[in-house]
Length: 163
Picture 1: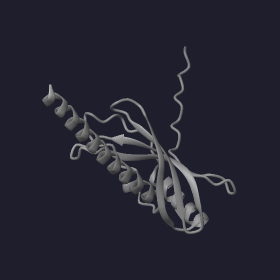
Picture 2: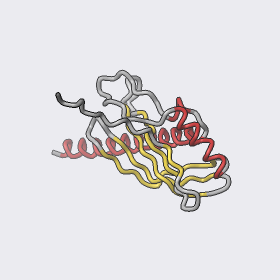
Picture 3: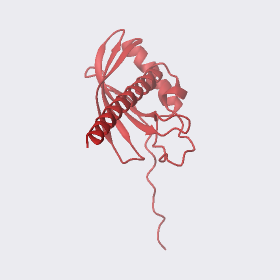
Picture 4: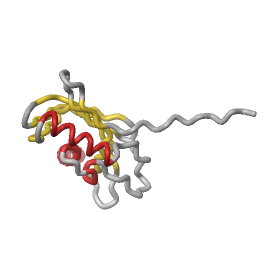
């Protein structure tokens, strides 16, 4: 009985330590992805979905041209990126199709503001920490209008005319 209780406590502590470590790594990956969007580094911003049987179909993500436009506009409006902080996270989706929406604070050379970002977690075959695929990034701006990086909407399928 005591051995079972000790085992349960050890398992709980181990689980807590692993989940804290995993969340720190995911947080680090999200920040790196957002920083890449501000510096126009598409390959680090929007990772490709790997050929992994556990991975869900990658959701639509911004194109390289959209990342470049976002980066240029951000520099024109606000200057260079200094820091990004994640304030809070909300996850959605099932076990194999997880998205995370984050409230963020963005510190730039000309301004500090808030915003939001959405990521898709992509399981990796060579690591046990999922990669973060940036789907959307918004910098709140009540004066000039929000600066938004998001994928181009896919065209709506049309039904062929029936004979």
